[in-house]
Image (tube, rainbow, N blue to C red; front, side, top):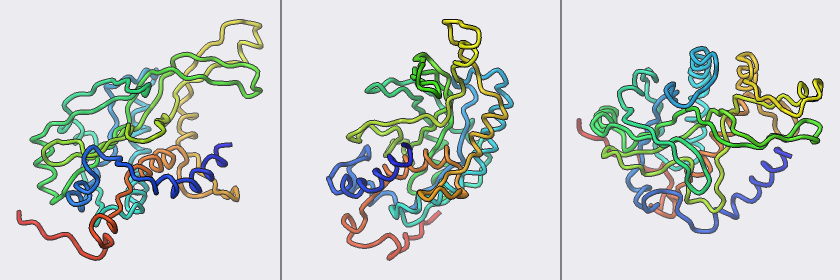
Length: 281
């Protein structure tokens, strides 16, 4: 079913993109003119967010490691939008950089979408963007949040709707003044969607059935199970295993779908026709 939905999305996406709508927090033409050189910070983990996992330190270490393995895939995905002249990954320690830039987080519930919104220190952002000669910087954060979800058993006979602890991925593109030019989740889409990176919990239907208990316990997945889930490879339409990690690639696909800038139309040329002008230090 998931692969069928993906296939339909690929077929319908060009039709949907044909309808004019702006997915940016500023006019699309302004974004296209302003952001030609995009920097991408290493993927952050917000360890002080709502992560309730019993072995929290081990989980954070695991996710940090997974993030580092997938950052090049994120860069490739953004480059494939052909929306920027240059996309570059900053060579900074993610934990140290997050502490330097982080100002505050705010749990939000917008249009039924629950997520963590981040705010950054403007002075530190300005220094970082200027130092790397960037037009704007993308900041991607993996954080924890507890939100409701309905999960159905494998035999489709039972379900449990309750609060589960999730890992989610959010992203923003900010300029040197701290203005958020674009963000994910994105509330400018016609159909709002914000899937979690990973649900850390599951309802134990089998144990309740075995004990003839009406109460279904919600348990945390094991670290090994979480690692296997994060390592799981995506399969193509012919069921062949690819080199892409499924959960991360799904998130990157969501981000990429919201980052398409029609520079041919806005600027009258393709991104690779003219390199950005060199900035003076």
